Image 1 (tube, rainbow, N blue to C red):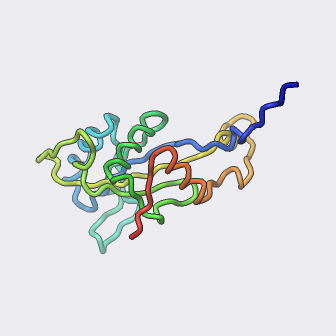
Image 2 (cartoon, rainbow, N blue to C red):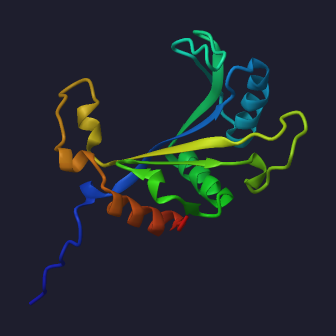
Image 3 (cartoon, rainbow, N blue to C red):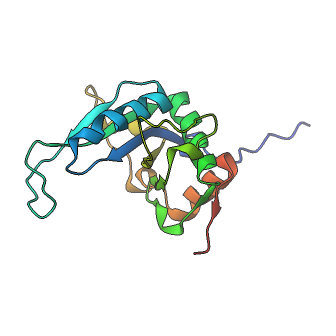
Length: 178
């Protein structure tokens, strides 16, 4: 008699990288926007969008609707490859506070830490923020237009330990002690 195979886990509970957002903030100096835009284009090969101030901040010298940054959003395999490169540029080390529910956020101090990227005097020295958003299979049911439904709160949130084990297994992430 043949024994039935046991299922180890539910495939709908598996985690995947939903999107990756790369952001460079330039503050109130709009002349840095061109170098930030060319850097993100050089790293990703994608169209770069500008971020604008929603309100004025006189303490920082920022007016409403002033350009304050450049941003690129990547999805699917491009996001996965870029996250691996960004973690490698950071030495695969992240702070424990970088992991929150469903996301990972960290900064790369200088773009020359990326493999295959050399210093460009036109760009100067810039760093960037990397924000990775994770999700589970089946979350689209709450976002779709037809037959909209909702997933349970347990299915929506990925807790710290589960996120950390996923990052260690798939990306070789180590937590820094400082």
